[in-house]
Length: 340
Image (cartoon, rainbow, N blue to C red):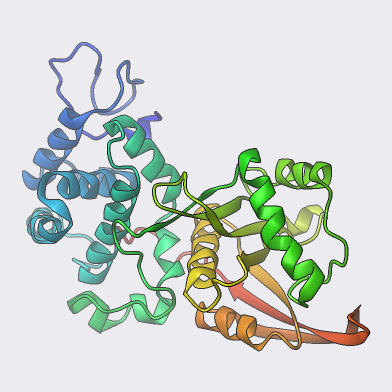
């Protein structure tokens, strides 16, 4: 765990902890550290400059675990308002950001119920490493509005996931490839959602997964705790292999036939947007067949805008198809420093 992930003011009597800054930990983070962080914030014993995004997430995790999703908001609101009174930040307390981050943290904790505190915290910080992750759920204007600062407002892009949701989205593994291919084969053979006309071989699909490294994740939506049936999948891919396009990605979303119109595609795409933001990408591009009105509507609902039209560039099922280009821009710095 990096120094940035160390809660300040951990138990100084523990020989495995050499202070809150400068030295590496020699023991895994545990409940004592989260409690020490909460005490430091509640007592305003840490400077505003040291109250990083990562420490905000760990503080939220502590309150969710100690008080439950329902009680965490009141406790965190009180702690942050008291802390800000002693160390005034530039923008003051932001109710919507606090409530939204708590919702995301509670959802993560519910997905990984029973995990060790260290593993739970590591996964949380990896998942929401960027404070811009809320842009997957709010437009810049909505998130930074006076209403959002005064009180919690509902997301205007993708709904915040409910803690304990029965569908979980995680990174794809080789064990998921058969299900991924089964879902994809339907669209290859019967739909214009993809312009592929031949189902990839198992070897080609394994190579596809291998090419989707940390910056270009492939994900699956699964029922239950992560070991259930795969009901959909998504991916972020290179938009163009040229080096200057490194921070531009293309998204793909597929839902198992028969499960459409249940919100799964929206969940998968919202997760991809959140991952793209966290990974530092600048734009997400979608290429959509001109006859796929539902896909256009889905992308528009999640903040994608029309970026162009390519006429008669695809030929499938004995007809020529247009391609609609859509783009989801990610702001550079609108939420930098905007912690819960």
